[in-house]
Image 1: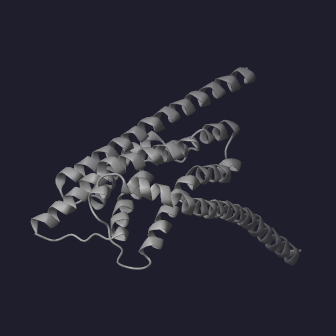
Image 2 (image 1 turned 90 degrees about the vertical axis):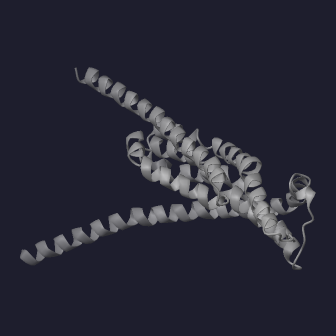
Image 3 (image 1 turned 60 degrees about the vertical axis):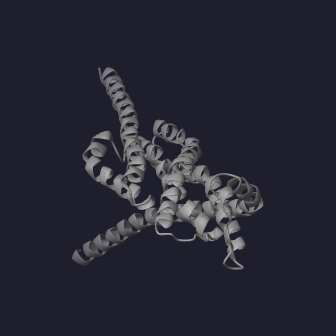
Length: 269
C-alpha cells in the first residue's frame, strides 16, 4: 500500500510538472511565431525601403542643413551603406503598427473581452506617435545638435570635411531613440489596459522616470544646457501625459469593476 501511495504521488508530481511546462512551451511557441511574422514584415519593409530610399534621400538632401554643404564619400561602400540605413528606417516605420498588433495578439488570450477591445484601439496610434516623434527630433533636436557641433568646430578653426555616412549616422542616432520614446504614452496605456501598470505605481516611479528622461536628453544632444533642456522637458511632459492617460484608463477600469459588483449584488439579492 505504501509503495502504491508513493508511486501515485510521484505520478501526480510528474503530471503537475508536465502541465506546468506545457503552457510555457505553448507561450514560447506563440512568441516565436509572432517574432517570425514581425521579421517577415521587416524584410518586406527593407525591400520597399530600398525602392523608396532614393526619393527619401533626395528630399533630405534638399533640406537644411544638407543643401548648404558638400557631403563626401570616404569609402566605396558609403553609398550602399546610406541606402541600407534609409531602407532600415522605412522598414521600421512600416513594422511599428504591425509589431504593436502582434504584441496585442500575443497577450490577447490572457485578456477579457473588454480588455481586448481596450488594448486593440491603441494599435493604430503606434505609427502616428512614431511620426510625431520623428518630426520633433528632425525639425527641433537635430538642427540644435548639428549647429552646436559645427560651432565647436568653427571655434577651433577646424576645416570640416563631412562624409555622407557620418552625416546620416549622426542624424539617425538622434531621430530613432527620440521617435521610439514617443511611443511611451501608448505603451503605458496598453500596460494599464491589461492591468500591468497603474497611475499609482507610475507616480511612485516619477523620480526614476525623470532621471531617465534627463539622461536620455543629455545622451542624444550636444553637451550644452539649452539643448539638454530642449529635449528633456518634452520627454518629461511626455511621461506626465502618459501618467494622465493611464489615470483615465484606470478610472474606467474601476468604474467598470464597480458596475459589475453592483450587478452581482443585484443578482444575488
